[in-house]
Length: 220
Length: 115
Image (cartoon, rainbow over all chains, first blue to last red; front, side, top):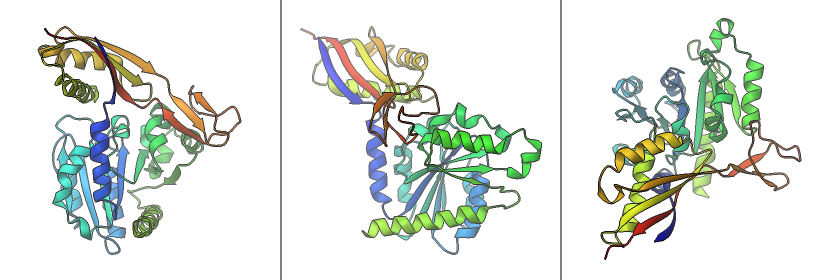
């Protein structure tokens, strides 16, 4: 006997994501995705320094193992919770739901979720965030957007890191940016160097404006 | 690498349904997998095999049907199937919205009802 089912396998994650979104309705929430080593945690450290006296921030760190990243963020004076996926290649909405009670949400303006280092799977799992940010470092090579288009398609901001190393990399920045905007014409692009603290102000300003927008939306 | 967890969710969908068919045996599960779902059929089959060594799925067959990526042009509202990047509409616009091809669905199952 054949039975028609037509049920979404990802519905479980989607339900958790919507519940998270409701809990985070007054907090600007971003999901940062990159390859391992692109500089997600370093960017957070630099960013938090610029933002900590203006807004209340919390961080969720996703890694296969260790609490190293959460400890790095906590050292900046920011509440951070580490999720270890024990081999899992991405964070899912249920993992986020499990750790949200660990924060005083009523006091927060900004929640940054640093996903597991991976340009593939994290793009597929809605965590309940407002937007996804994709971080790419020039040392990874300029062909990554074309090879991993989905994460660029689903992100609102692409940050290109390690531009201080451009002289040592065969990356054509013009072609790289063109590839990104061809995949996603609406994406905003920024070039930074965490090491030289270049253009971190631009990223910080963008975060502040997005936090303001979210607050206006939640009042309406 | 997340095919295993997706397959677990897919079997959960079937489990929930099978509660209504006490003791029935599952012959076939048809999954519809969008081409943008980031799922490799081989990895899904491997996960299926590993997760169905026993129980009502022991002899079940997995059928994977690939679904095309459907795009809609924000300028002229035309719906079309995606080719290679960059995605552009025949009207020249690259303001494109994905309307299908990211999903993983349990489409239907075939069961033997017990006596």
